[in-house]
Length: 392
Image 1 (cartoon, rainbow, N blue to C red):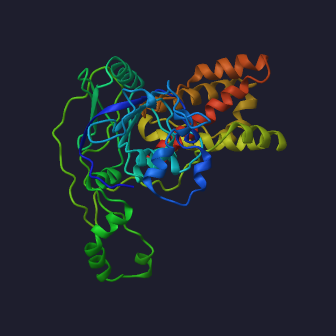
Image 2 (cartoon, rainbow, N blue to C red; image 1 turned 90 degrees about the horizontal axis):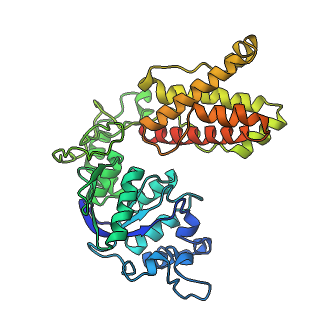
């Protein structure tokens, strides 16, 4: 894919207002068998089955075929896609990111992305920008009112601005990926740019076998440490831009990118949970809830200074001693804690104790409705764990 340095991108946009736009819509599965990496081939396949009918004729009412948005991306024109929420869901095929990059898009803005697709975009030199649902809708409204509306994405300062209204939001990006985008580096380019420093470090020798087993991380002098704040209607205050300092390879460092000691699971599903719980007479469910009680402490305790009781210990002691009342309290507190952490991390998913009382407690009178709560619980923890694995 084309490598071009990222700085400030100001362009008109293509509004693709499709929630849960999955990778099969972005590029149909039949294109995955191709062995080419030709950007034009994948660019032509971008949103193909929405752009064209079975006979290959353009679908007139699809947004990319409308005269206002039909022009292929170029400098300042249609370099930005404003997409619906949960953009890039579905399979993990990297071809979806190849298609977006091959079409000429440099930025995709949404209120949420599928985690794997988001990383694939970054690896293909396409910047995924997460904004609030309110700002996302404002962009859609501005573009609908005037297709020539321009959006400015300031990568150094990590801001996105609707030039039609002047409203702006801050967005997060991994400091390493930001450095690479601003210098047009892929992972190999980055390593080659530090070849002399790596060779100099290796030339110092290894003091012991124990030292040889330790892989030192690279220091990044980040423009600013990530700060999590409650979402407001006010645009964030402008801050002076700071240059990303060149990378130094050193054995002593004060600040390192977050690397979790252990990756938390992000792919728990209702079907597996239900079937294995049935087969094991409930034992699998107890194990998963015990893991969740540990994971929420890993993810949230350093921020909320709370600790959720281990479910296994709780299940065999307090739950039955209180005639089941303690179970109600435990799930109520767990659900609220998970919901609060989702809000603190600005993850666009609604979950709270009300879900427990509605779907699990009251829903138990219907029979299958407690499964709705289980699904929401597993989904919420998948999202929290994914965010923790990336940011800490």
